[in-house]
Length: 115
Length: 115
DNA sequence: CCGCATCCTGGCCGATACTG
DNA sequence: CAGTATCGGCCAGGATGCGG
Figure 1 (tube, each protein chain N blue to C red):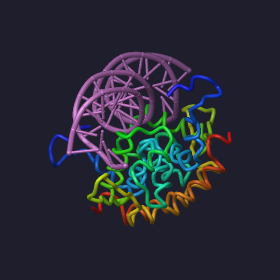
Figure 2 (cartoon, rainbow over the protein chains, first blue to last red):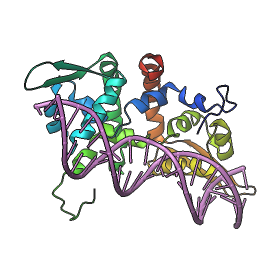
Figure 3 (tube, rainbow over the protein chains, first blue to last red):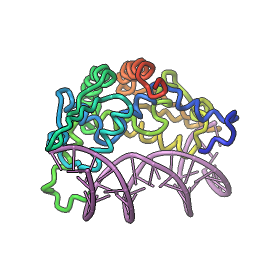
């Protein structure tokens, strides 16, 4: 998968240039959809961990970091003791929400569990 | 991750009950979106391999098999020599197409490449 | 209360060669 | 032309324990 020269003869990047794939990658984490869903409302870290059954702190952290890196969510730190961190949807996340709902409707009709 | 008893005490399945996640999993393969995109029109196997740059026959086969298993696409075999197989969108795939387009629009605005 | 560091594992993906 | 067979690498995700 290495691109040897910067003027690579193989259009490996051409694949990444698909905006749909790009979008898909941004929600591809195992828990990201559920997290985004709960972030309709502003949530604290521990609150999220309770809302998402079965996720560990480490994984929750990594998923949140990726969502933040992709500017899907916003992270607000309150400098106080005990620590307090709030997560909420950023612009990209808000705009993605209708798509999430469409996917849900589609999933109910055609999801694998209906087979 | 093993559920020991068939009456597992862990609600691992509860996670899978989200229709959105369910939908996401059905298009999660590395090449599935691009394949679905090209299947707007009916395509033959070799044609797909040419249209999707960099994919091998083995991988293309596995991705197609999964899409077929999930009833996203239809596989039509013509019993003749040389062999001929045509792939096209099934109902679920057709219905998913608008979502794909929405994701594309969103990806153009908020995709990682714009950062 | 919140988050990072480390180690480990399973499954997707890939290259290559062979078949009807 | 349209696939299978086989071997192997890579990495997301998971468990655990430490720190501020």
